[in-house]
Image (cartoon, rainbow, N blue to C red; front, side, top):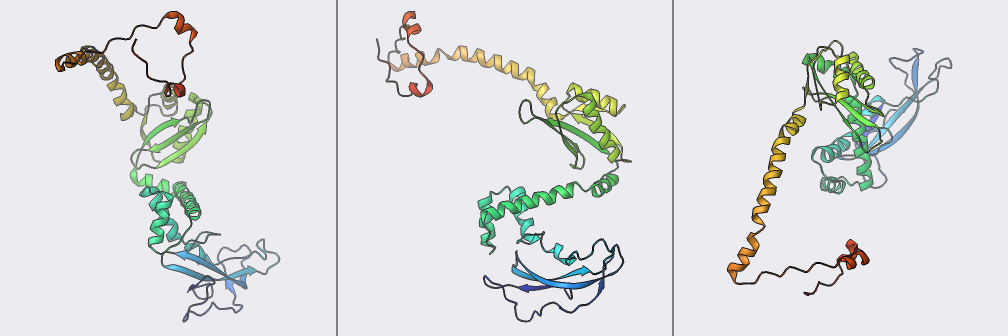
Length: 322
C-alpha cells in the first residue's frame, strides 16, 4: 500500500524482494492522522520489515513508521505503525490472521489434536512447529473471548431478538473451590456473564442477575431456567419478581427418571435371584458334576492371616481343593 505498507513475497530463509514489487516510498511525506491529540502531522521516522507465514506462502511487509514531532503533544516521538498491518497479523506474531483462523477452526470446530492440525497445515504447505500451533490456538481463544466480550455487538443482537431467556448454572471444580457461575441466553446461545464466587448465597446470586439486567436494558428477561437450587430460586424471586422460573429439561428428566430407576433396580435384584440357579442345572444336563463348595476357613486362621493386597492377590497360587 502506497506510503504505508508494501507487500512482497519472500523466498528462502532470508527473504529478498520479489521482482516487480518496488519498496515503499522513503520520502519524508507529511500525513495527518485523524484523532491526534495535538492535531498536527506525522512524519516518516523509519522503515522496518516483517515476514509472515500465510496460507498463500511467506510474505514480507515493508512498514513505514511515523512519529509526531510536536514537543507539546502527549504522543511526542511515539511510533505509529500502519493501520493496515493489523489486518495481516497480530502484534509480535509470525503467522497471518488466516493461519490463526484456520488453526482455531480445526482445533475448536473440528476437534483436531495439535499434531493433526500441524499435519493439515503441512499438507497445505504451511510448516509450523507443534509449539507454534499451540500458541496460535491460544491467540485464537483470545480473539474469540474479545469477540464475545463486545458489549455493543451483544446489545445489538439482543435488541433485534427482543427478549432474553436467562439460563444460569454453577460448576465447582472441587470441594472448597470457588464456583464458576455462567449466565447465558437460551435463545441466542450468547454468554452474558461468567464469574467465580466463593459462596452461593441469595445476595451474591441476586447481584449477578441484577448486573446482567442492567447491562441488557432495555431488553426484558422473560424467563429463567436453572437446576432448581434453593438459593437460585430465592435469588430469582428477589431480583426478578414476577418472571417465570422453571427447571431445566435435563434436571427435570433426571428427577422424573428416579422412580423408574428405583423400580428397575428392584426388578434387577429379583431377576438375579431367579437366574442364580441356572448354572448348576446346565452342568447337570451336560453330565458334568457341579463343583464342590469350598469349606469355610476357620475363624482363627482368618484372624491371624492378614488380608492380601490387590497387587499381592494377583501373584497368589490357585487354591487347591481340600
